[in-house]
Length: 160
Image (cartoon, rainbow, N blue to C red; front, side, top):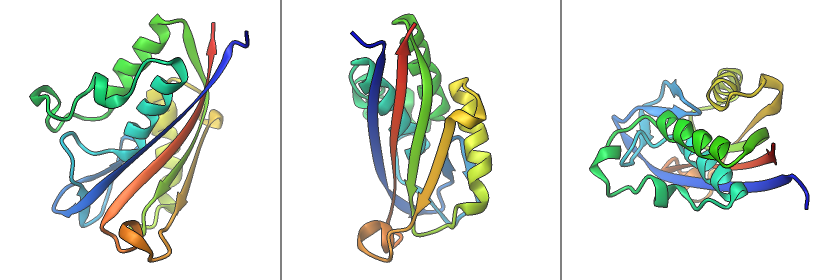
């Protein structure tokens, strides 16, 4: 049996005026942020799902239900920390992460290095093992109409 496992995660949230926008643990200046129970960081939420999926440990909604008042306005970095501990406790380590953020606005090109660095720090892996891509919605659908923001993440974990 191979020691490697792959996981995929995704998340999407409506955008709302007056909410802060967090991506990968970085606050991004924008007039809208994710309408969510926690801080709504779609990138960290998708990462949690990818990690849990790779290890066969369920999903974000099972571990951090959005109807639990304990997670109201919670910083998503807490979800990452608890998920990593669970992974480590099951004998896994993270090899790398490849992520896509889908947002018509704000433009994320200048923010990608900071997002990568923060992800590397939160995930406890070297910067070069983190990749972040940004795509627009080409003005199509809720993402293109700036009504939503989404992320997809693929991770590779290894049994150690």
